[in-house]
Each structure stands twice: as C-alpha cells, then as structure tokens.
Image (tube, rainbow, N blue to C red; front, side, top):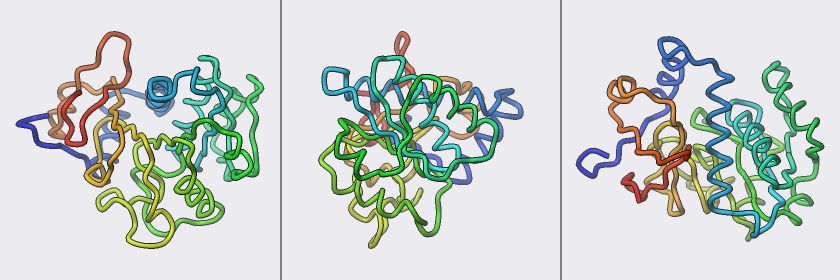
Length: 239
C-alpha cells in the first residue's frame, strides 16, 4: 500500500463502499456475499489444509457477516471438509434461508450447542459480527465469543474479530477483551482494528474496480492466479 502506510476503511466508509458496489458497481448482494464467502473458504484452505483435520465449526451471526460464513461453509464442504454450523439467530431474509437450504442439501449439520461442537472441532470460523457491529454483545453470543477466546482450536475471523470495535479493536474489558483469533480475512480492505491484530492477516475481495479503490483511497492487492485472497503483513504490505 502506498508509501508503506496502512490504508484502512472505517465503518462509515466500508458501508458506503458496499452501497456503491451495489449501485454504480452493479453488483447484487448475492454476488458480493458469494465472493466474500469464497475468499473466506480459501483462507481456511490455506491456513488449515485438509490434513490438519476436516471438522470446521462455523459460528454464524444474523447479518451479512453470517451470510459470508454460510457461503464459506458450502465451499468448504465441496473442498472435502466436514463443516458444522452454529446459527442460533436465523434470518427470515430469503437470501439467508436459501444459503441455509443449500447447506442442508449437502447434509451439513446445524448444531445448537456451541461448546459441545467446539470440543470436537479442528478449526473455527468466526462469522458472527462484522464491521457494522457496535454496542453490547447480546445472548447467546457472549458465551460463544468467550469460548473462542479460550479455546486452543485455531480461529479465523471474517472481516472483524467478533465483539471488536471497528476503530478501537478489542474491548477494554468484558466479552471479547481477551479474544485474539489466529487468522483474519479483511474483506475489500482492512479496517482500522487491524492495528490491534497480531495473527496472520489476509485480504479478500477480488472484485473492486480501480476507480472505486481510488475513490476510497486504498490499493487493490495483487491477487495471483486463481487466488481470491492475498496474505499481507500487519501494516498492509503483501508478503
């Protein structure tokens, strides 16, 4: 990224960019979610190949971040993993219902007991809350986030570690204050919270045009070959 400086998108800019992709950019939300979920699945495949264990537990929230997780789980199932879905607050939105149905048709298991599922998981995908999260973590997610914070099972967070403030990172106390996932995939561009993240960091979103990237003042990373993701250093430079 330019001059070695880290360029990040705050919550308002990230929301505005999403709206622009779906207006002047002519993308549908289905397309963006599919591409985001594909990116997430590629990160899991890269950091946790099949020989490390096939059981991937995907914690799904009620919004777009959860939708990305549902898409990722479908791709992981086709790669040969055995995903399990924890989805306690199912959306009535048709898009999310279709994504869940696609997984059910692949015999992907939906579970109600997160700690029990975590005890037999090889990897966790945190797709609970994304960049638009603010305020208090509500039930049943406090116990889920605490469990992810305490587990030895590696965790990949989608766009933002759940409970983290988009600008300030982990909360100073309470739920999520000790949650530091192993891997993070920033969708489209990193968010300011990455300055608090210490694990392996990826960027996904191989659909942003140069014009939109210029408008929001960030560089589109150089994706290679078929890759939908690029691993970057904490300060944003490509590895």
